[in-house]
Length: 501
Image (tube, rainbow, N blue to C red; front, side, top):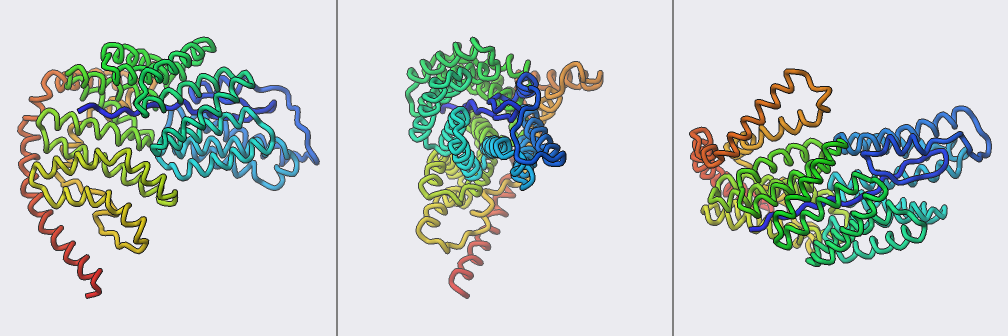
């Protein structure tokens, strides 16, 4: 079974400067901001020191968020941009600096939209990006309009609306070419390529990626270059050219580690894992997946985390390890349920569109549970898909504890998951520290973890068959029987409640 891709979109982050607005990528935010700084030239109605100070503070928060976005958990950037937004909206700032505050408000809204999308909160992302689009059109900012359209396309694509996303990307591409924005043109071409990939148009995707790559290298934008290299890797894997896929993914990994781009590193590691699955090197694939999982969880990338968990589960199922596969597939479902919970305010069409992008993975888990004669657990997984359909027609349908919280991991399953990925988590944390800043103890620990990981890679089957893991698997039988009894009792109680007994 082919691993599912998690492709990295080219979002444009906006930063306010004293001379206007530019779009940058997080790994270059500090450099771009400093380059754009110029002597203060603002028109204002009634300048007061406090208003000017507050505007400068808003600019600092906006810049701080940009620096945090590429290297830290997304929530840190989100908090900084929320502070910037509040400052730009202050009455005193608006009255003293009407143009700059409105521009800053739009930039903050757009960046918040990107952060929410990265966190898997697609409803909030769309809301903020639509507000940004209104502002940039109101003030006649064509560059900002292209950025907002591109980021809206990414948000809709994340919900499975790929054809709709193509429309947004095409509009962004037209604007970028019209105003001579080469960076925006490259981002739009990259995003179009990703959308074409999801639509199954792989050759067309490769053509779009290759155009984008020329631009990224021409302007020296390493972050976009790394995104495109990773996307080319996925496209070539889909075309069955696996060595090409590995080569492109390895190039992407080198760049993202060099520039400290954590989201890109997690994505590149996951893509390498999937490429090695395609050539039958399963132990090596698991090692890359381990590291990718640690990074996605660290930065709050729920879409990436759920994709990696799902790919680990499918790989274990392929290796005839159903009990272990179920552990990871369950966890993937639970992460996706948290995302579904955050988009309940969107239209039924958009909610259903997202559900369709993940439904096959739910069914794969249910099928695996049925093969293990774990019928009630399989039913709960399928019920998660049905609840949305029922909600569409019966607004007062009573959710059970199971459908509210996803699927339960039994205690042995939690322990198995933790042991399997613990090395990857710790390695990911240590590799986030610049090498020059590592202590001798940390460097020794990295060497130890690398050796431990090599041991698992060389004898992953032995790791699975180790007494500790097998004891946990054996413990599952007793836990499953106990869970079935509790589930039957819970369903009986729910039936009584629904009948008014």
